[in-house]
Image 1: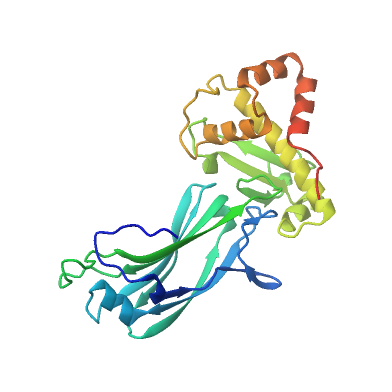
Image 2: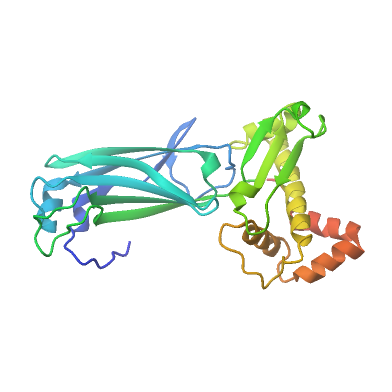
Length: 298
């Protein structure tokens, strides 16, 4: 990890002993992987790590009084949902070496894309009595590290809900429905919602098992992904302002659709695909089916 050059004294790296993050599963704890290939938005995450802090040396090397209160904090950021927030906050006021158990639970509905976990030791409150070269402001970072976890699943990567279609305007026997609302400038997380019919037990069970899918579950999820991708691409092509030179904000529906288009049709222009859909809908459907690699499950 490359340390930033800060305008105040900070302790050496060896005052902190941070064990790797662990992912807590039904079968026990495992080392945090680089990616979760079977993750979806219904899968919450439970993470743990242990950090030991030599508080006396932290304060001494930072030029802080012995009674300085510190905080060990964890903050999460998800690039897919464009959300972030505090995950854990432990105030440290004692001396000696303190062992801190960090236990973090994150809702799957808030996540997506790349999950970043930032752990930092910071000044708990402003110190007016600190030396000129020492940290003074509350929140001044004395030590930090970052771990990442890529969340990528067979299921479409947006929020979903399991409901009874009999109580809606949707056909009772439909298995799912992708709801798209708002314009291309709207936030993706508020524009997309996958609704799964609880009466269709095959589909509902596939999403329940998304963390550990069976072969049949993978096939169902592949079909849902292919249909959702088709719906999203057709929705995008229906907007005249959906074009290569469009400047959509990060986290917007337009940016998400552009990213999906580039993934499915690399090297092809939006106008060419739009024209193909108009002139030969059957060929367009086959092209899209090939692009999403439907039923290519391991």
